[in-house]
Amino acid sequence: MLDVYYGEFLTSPCPLELSFNACIHRCAYCFANLNQPDRRFNAPATARLLANYRNRHTLTAYLLQAGYPVVVSNRCDPFSANNYRQALPILEIMTELGIPIQLQTKGGYGIDTALRFLKPAVWYITIETHDDALSRRLSPGSPPPTERWSLVHRLIELGHGVVIGLNPYVPEWTDPAPIIARAREAGVWGIWIELLHLDSKRQVKRLTPYDRETLGEAIITKAKASRHKGNWPAALDSARAQVQDAGLEVFSNGQPIKSNFWDIYRRFYPRTFPTLQDYVNTLPDDPDLPLEFEAFAAVMLPHLPAGEYPLAHYLGATGHDLWRQYTIPPRMTYRQLLSILWQEPTTRYSLTNSSAFAFIVAALDGDVYQVTDETGLPCLSYGDHRSAHYHQIVV
Image (cartoon, rainbow, N blue to C red; front, side, top):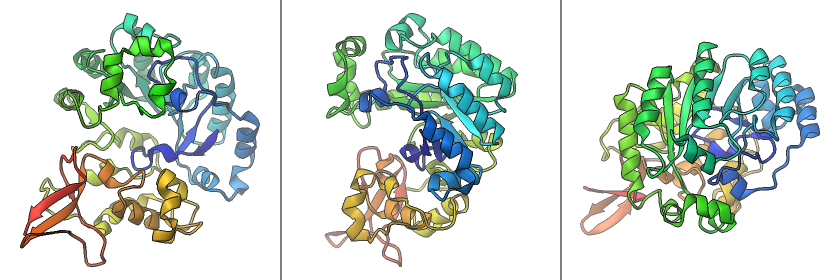
C-alpha cells in the first residue's frame, strides 16, 4: 500500500511509504511481521492511486504531487521472493511518473532489473551481523551479509547513495567494528544503529517456537527492556562513537548527539520532511538553557506543507483521547500538530519520548513547577535524558 509514512514522522525525511506483502525473509526479529503477519499488498488500489494521484485531494496525493520521496519499505523487503514480481512494475511506473524512491532492503530478487530503470537514490542496506552463518539463522530467507556487501559496492559504483542499517544491533550477535570498517572502505555515507526492542505485550507473545529458539530467552529478556535498562544502551553509545571515529555519519532514533546523517538524503531528494535530528543540530549543549516552541517551529515548518490536512493519525493511538483537550479538528496545520507534540508527552512523537529532550521543572523555595514560555507552552531541555521526562533546574 502506498500511504503517508506515519510510522517515522520527525525521524525520516521521507513522508511516504510503499509496502508490499509481509515478506518471507523470515527474520526472527521482524517487528512488522510480529505486528501484522498477514499483510497483503493491494495492487489494484495502488495502481489506481498512481494513475490519478494528480487529481486527488488526499494527504498522500498531495505529498506525491509535491515531489516528496517514498520509502520502499519500512515494513517489508521489496526484493524478497514473494514481493519482487509485484514490486518491479510498481517501481518502474513510479520512476516513469517522476516519483522519488528511497529503498530499504537486504537484497534478493529482481535488483538487476530494477537497476536498469531506477534513478540514483539512497539505499538503506540492513547488515545486522558480519557472520553469514548467524545471519542464515536469524534471517533464513534473505541473502547473507557477504552478498549484501556486494550489492553495496555495486550501488555505489552506479552512483547511488548507501547507508547501512545495523538494525537491530545486538552486541551478542556482532562486533560493530568489522561492519564499520567495511562500510568506510566501501564508501558508505553512514550507519543507522537501533537496538533490538520487542513489545512484550504483543510481539513477544507472537514469536514462533523457531523465533524464540533462534533469538534465545536471554536476548528476548534484554530486548524487552533495551531502551533504558541493561547493558545494551552503553553498547549503543560505544558503537555510535566508533562510527564517528571512523569518519562516518551515525544515526539512532532520538539520539542526543549531533549528526549529518540525513544530508545524503537531501543530496538525492530536493524536497524532504524535517527531522528531529535537524533541530538537534541547531542546539547548544547547555541542558539548562530553556528551549521554546517558536524556535522549534522555525526549524521545522519551512520543510512541511502549508495548509490544513487530516493529521490526527500522527498522534497515534492516544490521539482520540486528546481530541477534547486540544480541540483537535478533522483538519489541521502542521504547526498545530507540532504544538501538540511539543507539549503532550502521551503522543507517539512527543519530543520527550526521545532521549535527547525532557521537560524543564524548576525548584524555587521548596516548590517544583514546570517552566513555560510566555505563551504558556512548556520549555524543554536538550541533553542525554535517557531515563526521565523531566530535567530539574534550581532558580
